[in-house]
Amino acid sequence: MADTLLGKAVSIRALWKSYGPQTVLHGLDLEVAAGEFCTLLGASGSGKTTMLKVIAGFEEADSGRIDIDGRDIARVPVAKRNIGMVFQNYALFPHMSVRKNIAFGLEMRGLSSAEIAKRTGEAMELVELTAFADRVPGALSGGQQQRVALARALVINPDILLMDEPLGALDKNLRQSIQLQIKALHRELGVTIIYVTHDQEEALHLSDRIVVMDKGRIAQNGSPQELYRRPASPFVAGFLGECNFLGSGSDLWAVRPEALRPGPAGAGQRQVDAVVESVIFLGSVTKIVARAGERQITSVVGSGLIDRAPAAGSPLPFHADERDVLAWPA
Ligand code: ADP
Image (tube, rainbow, N blue to C red):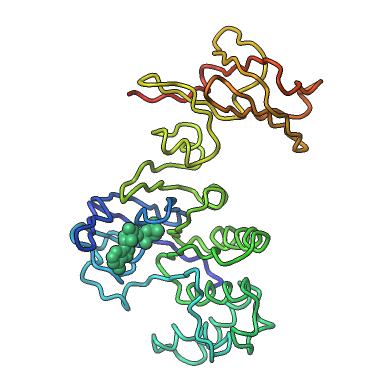
């Protein structure tokens, strides 16, 4: 475990999956590079879990192909796919100690007891659970249980690690602390991760690449920066980060709150006339909520740039640089 794992590349082609009459995956293509942290982000029911289950081999695709490290895994039985998995409900063995839970996958693989002890010890150290080795899961906090699940998935030196809403059951503070640990582990180990979440902040925080899913299709696939700066559709713009939609009909344009600033437009800028509704001081930034005709708009400005907060009810023009305007062909 101390060695860097060489994560494997995953290549998915034209993956179709239906449950009865309902098509859940519509011919998806996805390339995940070796060692990449790739997140499937989408609302509930968009097909994320089904995608993971098909990769893991718990569900069979109707058609399509999945290669890991250039090898088609269709005919590889589930137990022989070297895939680690972590789910929201930890799925730990309740009657086994932490050590036994983590060792289980190695015992199944028939390793020597010396090798099992060594790797289990290293995995416990990695997730900082050595002191809890002899406890059963019920005697651990939710966050600690999730770290056992993580160690159990990593101890087999997986080619890829699949994680399905692993932090969904944890409260916000704990979620953030485990996010940091997952990110550090990913950097340290170099394992390829395919991660599922419906939480855009979590996706932005963790991922090298985000795949936005919508009703069984990929709405966009790119780095967090690409998705935020150049969303391929209004759907992606609205799903990832806040967005002011200002166009109408076929002239559909939008601008992020931090790109919309108070004051009249100059050259190379466009203007939106509005009436201030509220001004919210948030410390380093101040949020101005205003009404532009039928629409409510939000502008986020560095608090240091505002001398005097505009009064609620007063008219105020806003402007955005043309290069910050998001627009989509009809
Ligand atoms: P997500 O993980 O994005 O929430 P899922 O992959 O779990 O989405 O589900 C996608 C769609 O497939 C949903 O409409 C869900 O109801 C349906 N579905 C998932 N699993 C089954 C199943 N075993 N049988 C029938 N329908 C299913």
